[in-house]
Image (cartoon, rainbow, N blue to C red; front, top):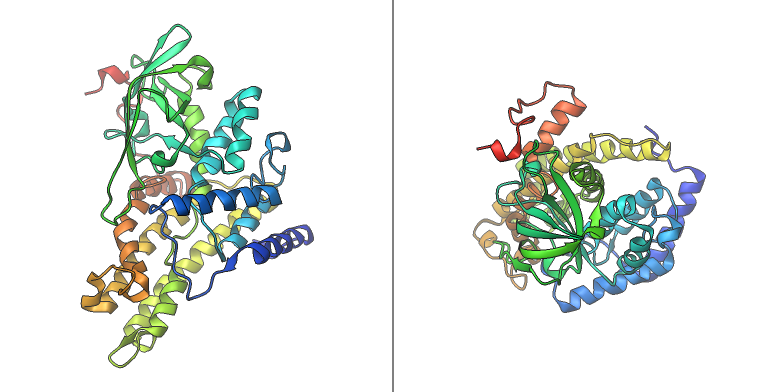
Length: 406
């Protein structure tokens, strides 16, 4: 594993830092974590402006082909920029699903004319995309989805429901996985489309979360008509197309959520317990050491993936390790902070709560982190089977026609 930048990588990092220094506020220990989910008009405008600014400066679509408005750069350059941007307070999250998952899928399967139409506006922040995958009865088992698409001439008629769709209430377009043939095994009868989220037959209902945000959504389709030209990949080949999206998703959702261990250390240094800073308490110090060690482990595991990218290699399923560990750490950090606060931990109003209520918000939103981007149980299976080489789960329905499943 090589932890040092090459000369070219160091030069690129310096360019990214110069852009960020000139246009964004550096994150420090007094900076409250942003709350993705509470996106009002002001926050959405800030996100649009920042995305447009990044695009104009050449730091959006870093890996995208130049033909579609990208920079034609490398994966390592994209990671370097993301590393540097994480040190600044910028509006992130609104565009990550579209630019990190949906548009890469479009670039793999859409037509030249479609890419000319959709990539530029997405890159400049003018249009937002979402990913319509999970359903009430098909979350971890995505291939068990029941949203149906039935062909009618040059169109498809779609009926069904999606759930937990992040950002659907803000989105202009989405990629949609449907079932087009129930007479074959569940992985073989799927087809992917991209859709207009404002078309007749699409209804978005935000889900009010216990954190107070409404970032997740239910999406209902009632006789939604989609042209066949909006199909991505061959009929029945939707699982292959979905895997393209999911592989990009692993990279796009791999960052450590805030408040992180550095935020907690800053809090422990300033918050008093028994007349002294909490950081001096031996029990707190022991918990910090344990969490910090896991954070360092994830960081170094990510460095291995970065090294592979730097060498032109493709990282493997080990990227799931960081996603799994980070989601659990987020809950643990928040719980520890609230234990320290005692009764004050029940107050989440940023105006009066310690640390602006960021740990309370984190605890309430952290269960979603253990579901989004693959549940913790699914990630454990991936790590067990594809990283450690352990025997796979028994899958009795693998070769059974979907319509014959109970």
